[in-house]
Length: 370
Ligand SMILES: *Cc1c(COP(=O)(O)O)cnc(C)c1O
Image 1: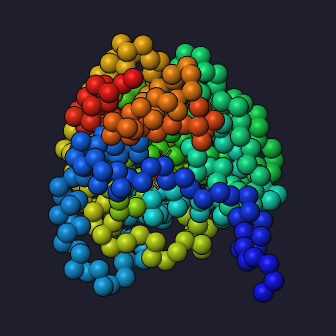
Image 2: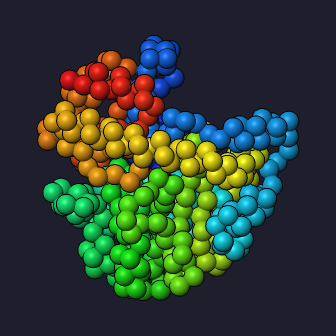
């Protein structure tokens, strides 16, 4: 061996274009330092936690951890199928919806078949394109002063960016980190403009929280547009982020292609059981939705009264535009055990994203604002 070994020079072309995930602060270390008074408002987790039915189901199946999980996840898929009215063959389960978003690009995009997404779209979209070795086209977002969707998806511009070789479009509705959304009718008009050969992925990670006029879900368009794919997660409203489980609804042929590359046991025994039980707890879901709706409105009012610009949100977080670099704001809160997420990584350096945590967490945020 001459010289210094560095595997970075050996990484393949796609991996060379990537950087490792920035996990933000070391949360386990912060929990040790601050204890119970920490306000964790950086990751959009559910402050109410999961359904008790999910916890009980998870605990029960722990004894089966020595067995491999059902590789088809059939029992959960049957539950999803009856709950959502979609055929079993159009359901794919993932180790979080993150895995499914990556899988779609792996299966459908390549160097000759670009991927299109919005500027300020969810961070996984450009990563999925790059990992597949595909060109990622970031379409300029709506302007910062747009009345309905500041920094949001510009569906007209996205449709205009599609060429005959575009294989995949990623949309998030509502979007993270902007919190913005587009209506069902706008999506329908968009799908009518996109060629059949372009797969349109609508990431509905925050679906359970939406209540705006004209916004429900892309699900009922699946029958009419076989190139439409909808992804969802158990990480947010279902409160199962730590178990890593999400799902995808698509034309059966899209699911069949993804099945070729999906790791056979990608979803574990505990996640399968907890997710199935969580789906059955309509009461918990309604409560999560109601508490979030109430506290989202309340926090928006409080921050606005504090002179901040809060962007409209249909999610369990708020994007706050400070009109100046957010680094010192974030550092000030951090020193007081209030964790919010700066958005410099999205090239939105003047903004922070704040999750709708528990009332106690949000009170500490308000008490500690600079
Ligand atoms: C949180 C989030 C996800 C969910 O990721 P999981 O891998 O399912 O935890 C997906 N898309 C968006 C836009 C998100 O904000």
